[in-house]
Length: 461
Ligand code: 4AD
Ligand code: MG
Image 1 (cartoon, rainbow, N blue to C red):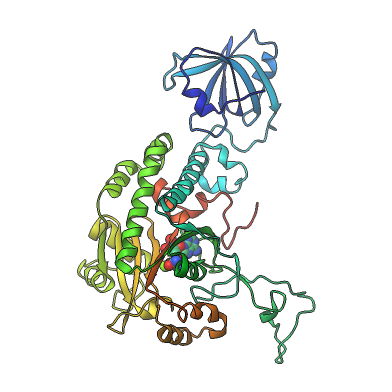
Image 2: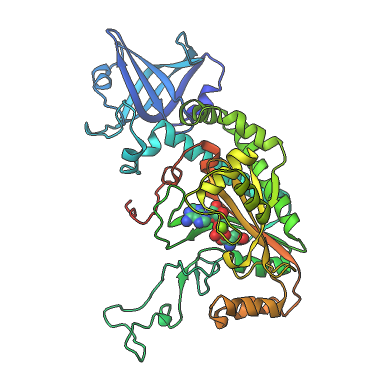
C-alpha cells in the first residue's frame, strides 16, 4: 500500500486518518494494556511513536516482536501527550514484514563505535550512523549545487589510470595478468608494465591531471569521485578508499584558489546547519559539545592565511615542544597542524608557499626558487582538509620537475601536451570528503563516516 516517509508524517498536522508508515522497530515498551513501539525508517533521527492497544487482533504477535523487525503500521496520527514528541500514531493495523532474529546485534543499550564497525551492514540503523549518513548525503548534494550554481562542469575522471598524480608511489595495481604465469622482464621479475592488456594500470589517487586537461578547454570544472591510496597508514584520518572533490579553474592563481576553497567550505557548513538541524543537534549533544556554535562562527568569518615560512616562525615562537622538530623544510605533522589551528589561530587557516621539496611535481615554482604556489587548508580537530595549488603551466619547467621527481616522462606525455597547445595559468584543489564530514559532525574516526570503510586492516562487507 502507499507509505509515507516518517519525517514527512511528523510534519503533518494531526489528526489524520489511515496513515501508513513502514520501518524497523527500534524499541518496544509494554505496559498492561498498551504497547509502545518506536519505528524508524531512516528518514529522521527520532522515528515515530506507535501506540498499540490490546484490542489489536494480532496484539500478541506485536508484543513478542524483537527490535530490528520490519513492520508496516496503519493508524491515526494524533497529538501526543508524551514529552519530546508532537504526534504519535494510534495503530489500527500492524503487519510484521520481517521479524528480526533474537541475536540482532543492535539492542537498546548504547554500543561503542568500535563494535559497530564490525556490523557495518547494520549500523546505519543506529542514531549516530543514521545521522552521519544523512549528513553525508546532504553534503554530497550541496557540493554539486555549489559548483553547478557557479557554472562549473562536472567531469568524470577515470578510476583506472596510467599515471601517478601525486608522484608518491602509493598506487593500487590493476592487473589483467595471469599471475600464475606472468610475463617476466629479462631479469626474471614479474613485468607489471604489462598489467592492463599490455600497459601499466593503477587505481587513481586523484583526478587532478585529467581535471587540468578539461579546465584547459572548459575553464571551470570539478570532479567528485572515489580515490585510492595504498599507503599503510593506521590513523584516524586516512582511508585506502576515500572520496575527493577537485575543482580546477583556468586563468586563476593561488589567491583565487584560496578564495574558492573558502567560499566552498563556508557554503557547505551553512547548508548542513540549515538542512540538518535535528541531526546536528544530536552531534552537538552527544558527539561534540558546542559544535553547532563553533561551525556557525567558522561559516561566518574569514579564514586566516599565512605562508609556510610564517607558520614555521609562529610554531617556533609558540614555545610548545613537539615530537617532530619544526624547521624550514619540515613537513607539518598532525601535532603542528593542531597547534596552528587550535591554539595559535583558533580557526581555519590556509598555509601557502611550501618548500618545493615537500610538495608534488605539478605545483608552480615561485620566483624565489625554493617554494611552490601551494596551499593547504588546516582546520581545528581534523587538520588538513584541503590540499591545492596553482599548477606549473610552463612546459620547460614542468618537464624538468617531472624528471627531477624521478617519474617516467613517457607516462605524462598527454599532460605535458596541454602545456604545448595553449597553456594558461590555472589552479585547483582537492577536498577530502570524509575529512569534511568529520569536521561537520565531530566524529573522530574516518571509519565512522564511510558506509563501508576500506583501511589497511579492513576490507570486509
Ligand atoms: O593533499 P592531497 O594528496 O592532494 C591531491 O590529491 C591533489 N591532487 C588535490 C588537487 O590539488 N586537486 O589530497 C587532497 C585531500 C587532503 O587534503 C585530504 O583532505 C584528503 O584529500 N586525503 C585523504 N582523505 C582520507 N584518506 C586519505 N588517505 C587521504 N589522503 C588525502
Ligand atoms: Mg596534502
